Image (cartoon, rainbow, N blue to C red; front, side, top):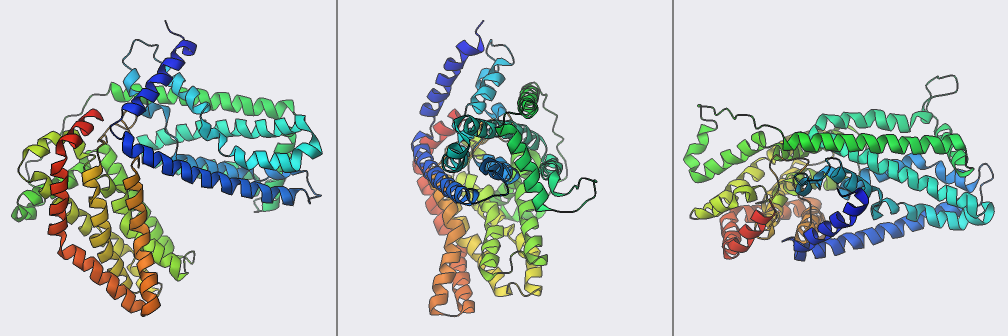
Length: 508
């Protein structure tokens, strides 16, 4: 029987081979380079912030430098937690190839949890703490206290890593678990509200003072403080271990429920559209039936609803530049979350689609009609911005037309280049589709920035209304010529269909 120590290098080797054999390797290398570049920029920002904080801390007399840095702990913890949604996978997302092997049932889960604890991602925030320690702590307090200062932050990073893994797994199971973020944040910020007599008054000074005291105990080697953080890490890691095992094996052993087929034909008005109408019906059925598609669609709707309400009924984004950004964001979010992955969900049955004459072209046309029509939802939600004077009706029409024409044109290009299948229902053991192609990242950036840049450029030579009229005209031109560019996409996709089919079947 292999032990964790013997199995770890074997599984680590398997993970590296899996990455090298991936059909997305070529595109993934460019995406990885861009991710490393963004990570380098983040590191530079963290070092710059660290130096600024160190210069402030050296002039303070009310608290020591190490207490000063720990006073910001609730803010750095919150930032670190949400940043992990862009980078860190949960162990259950990587365990599928190993669960049926003759290995003890917890061994694979243990391996991936250990790997997440030893991940380089847990060291990113240390670029905020290490320069600060070198500049403000080590010469004033000595090497011993500095080591405790950094070790304390690193253990807290590990706790955040495991807490994120638990939360991400629960949210993947049911989006209602997002509600749990409220009591968690309230617990982190609890010193902000409570006085010594338990009366409720908001005081940031009390928040900073509370965490600075915690930092003092940790850095001075208080046995109780260190026992608490190690016990907390052990409890959260054990809870994560049990939770990952429960959800992974529950999904692998679940029984498929029988699907009730309704005899009444829904959306009968689509009959006159022929095959295209059938594919539009398939798109709506996929959203209702498949868990991952439904969850992404609901998430997009909630994002649109949230930002529409914030922009319409609060003064948070009254500045015209922010209004323009959130308008295009609300319109483009459906494409960025769903249309960006065009053909990846269809990769589960791509060989059947390829058998029909011009079937893929009709499917792409149906998708274009569906994702253009759905833009009416954010349009209606943002009408209150017109009534409150934050935006004009022409602005809304211009951005909606540009999104339906140009942005959807950009997103649909990925039908040619997407070669990785996204799971329809598997949440924990499926291969999660992420922006692992430089083309996906590039198109996503273009979709959100091009309309804003065009408006800025047009306003140099004309009035604001004229700029929106030009934007509207560009969008209408692309909408009017959609048959031409969809046909071009189909021809390019058909030219490489065997390559795409092979890659999609290999990534199921």
